[in-house]
Image 1 (tube, rainbow, N blue to C red):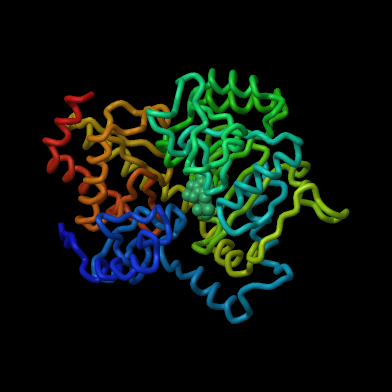
Image 2: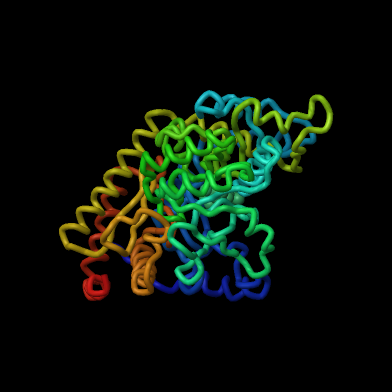
Length: 448
Ligand code: PMP
């Protein structure tokens, strides 16, 4: 195996420059730095090349966005063509109709669509739409689930054992200093896979809740499979109490041709989308039931919920998204599923044959390794102790040294240009890590 050098001098120098213009040297808190980020020169297919000439198999793909990998030729060609005709207009283009038609034809419950620019915006407009439709203001969400940067969606995103409260009634915890207490009061926090808790808490707050926001497999919440009884508890209690179900599929739409809700038997009223839908360009989309989506309808005057956006439905994002989504046919999904299974099964086998105190979660093209022997059921169970968190950092570092960009504390993803050999390489590197870190693993076993 060819090993990457640990210190990339040009990346190091770039980071020193960046620290003079950005508060911490970056423009996104999510950028990994160990101890500094690697700066990218180019991405091609499933690989990234940094400015120090190192090559990485990319399992991050810009936070699961690039399902066809980097510089996907059909998207590059379509964008090059579109660029010659202009990049944004104050009038619509036919591209947005085509992309909305594609989403409506594929994703159940998507009768109507509105495009925005990010997943954050999609979630915030879905929440506002639910409020406008129901006339209620509160929302319910899952502890530890990420929904972008809208305050209400950020509640209890980073809850810790010190502040997350009672197991049967999670506390609403602030995500940043100064977060308005009024926001905390407006959010009911639920635990993933806790069917009984969901029924009790949603019923308790029934008359105040506009919506329950649910990512069927929250990446930062552990990338844990939802239990069928949990899904039905959300569905039935919401339906019985006039609470809308918002499925946040910004990340998990990539789980199947019809998205994640279809895979897990959830029937949302609104679906939020992003990432893969933009083919590598910024995008967000809200789709849903015709009657609910009517809150955006301005044809008879001011709508219940006005929504605009300078770059919403810009023809570049629409073009890239349309081409990328058209190439995501049933065959592409079967390929991703096959590779995902090879990776998860291989990692699982490497763990059990060594009796290592680790486990792997995920589905379809997604996986995540946890520093615990027992598969977690929710965010609290997936919350690693200090030794486990250190081990996960070592894992990401070992992968980088062996030419793989593995996200830390979030979902890793397979892309369509990857082949069986790439999946097997991931498993080999993982097994190599276990063999190299036996003493750290033993220490974790002793503490569990
Ligand atoms: N919801 C989910 C489930 C996400 O994973 C993300 C992004 N990781 C968002 C919302 C926010 O999307 P964006 O970063 O495009 O604002």
